Length: 122
Image 1 (cartoon, helix red, strand yellow):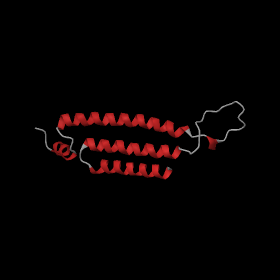
Image 2 (spheres, helix red, strand yellow; image 1 turned 60 degrees about the horizontal axis):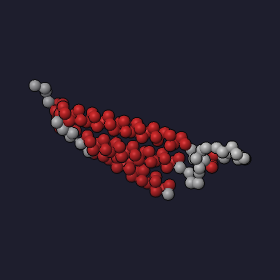
Image 3 (cartoon, one colour; image 1 turned 60 degrees about the vertical axis):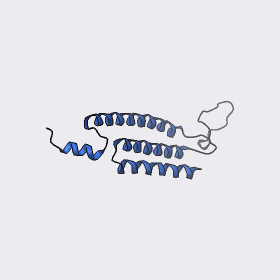
């Protein structure tokens, strides 16, 4: 199961990177960024998963010892929760900037925007 999740994460990251590099539309680039971030989050969550592990809450009622192999590492989940929040904020800011660019240049196409920047203002 772990190999499958790693494969899906790599496919998502590749798709997102391809969209960011090859597309000329700013909205498509932002969607590629969101897909890329999703692949990274899946990759890190997959790294922190342990089969048969339980949540790291200790029961002090007669438990003889604490073995780290019995518990899942909560650090990856905490970091990825933060990454999700940062990803949503990044996507929101990017969409707001794309809207302002569209309002000023009348296009989401990168080539049209660059052509408008090169023309002298009249």
